Image (cartoon, rainbow, N blue to C red; front, top):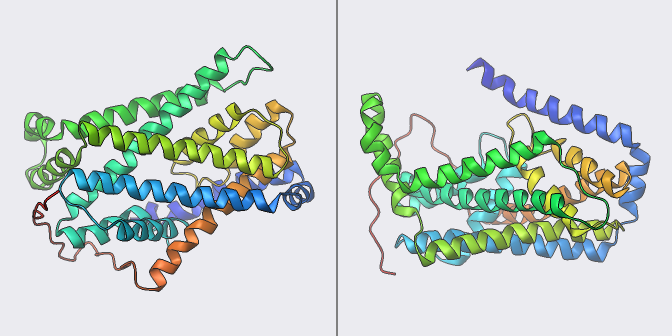
Length: 336
């Protein structure tokens, strides 16, 4: 449709315009000066921590598949995850990282609905942990009695709260998907009932329970806390003297705001949130923006490993077009 063709230019305009305004307001020369003073060794530590985060995410994906009786080699999971990261950051927007993972896994399982369910739940559990940490940090900042209190705009407080509510609702709906479809499926168009039945069944089958759910959520929280630590390490690389609480706020809130479809890879949103919070710790806007650039650079450098996976044949980039036949047979349950 015509409006879809305008979506990418619009996102570039909004993200690029906001980013240019923030950089210009902070003085580009001062941003560059702050960047040049960064501790290279600490940047290296941040890069290793970022890779460790991908390792955790691939392991969580593996736990979800193992619980379903569809275990995959960890080496393959890690390669597919890295390829997805590369697709998110470097390939055309029509080929998303999650779509790439679904395509690769779907061909191994013989079912794209099963593959989609595993990737969706892997992401959803991460969003839930992200929102809990964000809201916890806001409450922590509100109750903090020492030093200068950190203020979060009401709009951001409501956004993080609604995001957590949406994540909990989506988790509940995934668990109850077959029952919800049985109750409300009659209201769906006839042509949509069979595909929705496949999706509902796949979500319920892949939803982790008991010990598997505990492991998945533990890995989700570990990843998100590691993401906060990466922000703190990069802040230390730039000589920023700020409490850890600030990083516990800016890391998840930036990701939540960056999910808005008007932003491209969180550009503009990241710099705005960093500037908003770090200014409360008397950090110059130029240094805050330099930190935002550093975080983005660390993520890009690690995602380049996915390019090597693709280059050496570790990922199949051929995504089916709408008219292509897509097999969706029920996968054979493998022994645990």
